[in-house]
Amino acid sequence: MEFVFPLAVGIGSFLFLTAAFVTLSPTTQDRAAHREAGELTIEEFPPAPARPTPERHHRAA
Image (tube, rainbow, N blue to C red; front, top):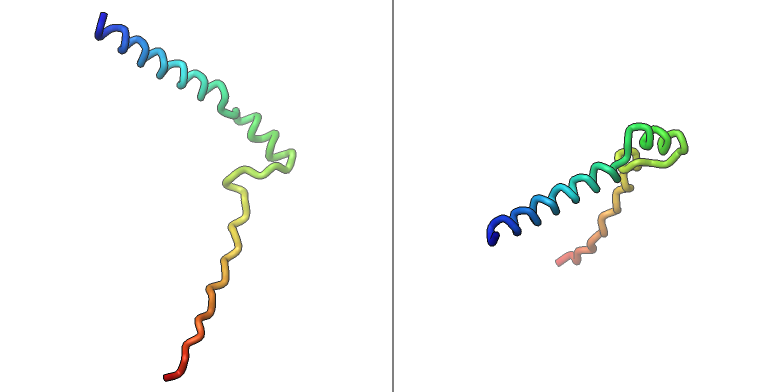
C-alpha cells in the first residue's frame, strides 16, 4: 500500500492534467475562426521595431 497509493495518485494526476490540456487546446476550426475574425496569433504578430542604439559621446584626448 505504501507504493501503490503514491503511484495511483501520480498516474491519476498525470492523466487528469493531460485530459485537461487536450480538452482546452484550440481545435483547427477555432484557429480558423480567430484568423477570419482578424485576431492575430503569436506567429502572425509583426516583429518588434528595432531599438536605436544609444550614441556615446567620446571626448577627444
